[in-house]
Image (spheres, rainbow, N blue to C red):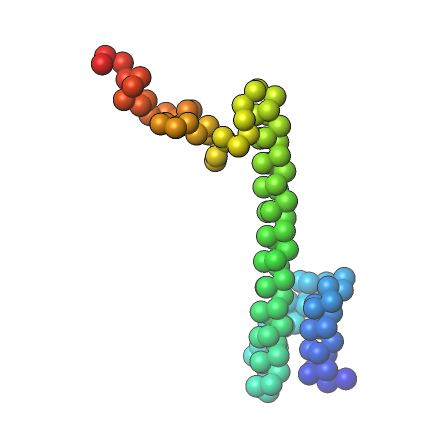
Length: 113
């Protein structure tokens, strides 16, 4: 099978998420981007873009899972402390006038006034 056939198989393996050596595949795709045949170059570029796109999707799944776990843990801690978890935004407690837990005192509690 020729280079173009190999690229077709590699693209199918990437799309179907077969267990392949991704480092070796990335090296081969990089090398084929400088092939003299423009069709091979375009297919290699397409596969590189596909691999990058799939990596980003996978990273977002991991990050979303971590954030969900963190939010669940913060909600559990807030409930244990008797705080309504819906009041917690970005790790601080929101009140109607100020943010509790900030380092800057509000006008109402500044000393000497």
